[in-house]
Amino acid sequence: MAAAAAAAAAAAVPGGPGAAPQGLGGWLRRAYRFATDRNDFRRNLLVNLGLFAAGVWVARNLTDIDLMAPQPVP
Image (spheres, rainbow, N blue to C red):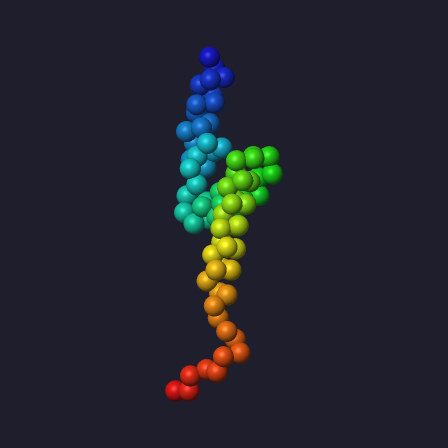
């Protein structure tokens, strides 16, 4: 009973292990932990699919640029 009360009190403390992150720094820490967690298959799958989708978007949207085409003169 005392251990459960101590665990509940520790979780209620701001900045404790179960606390939500505060501000931009907390958001960045959570995003970094999300992207670098090597032990969670679902997170790794989501991150890899996101990177793949970003690569497909870049490939589809930047392939129509012809770098050798004459540029308009102002």
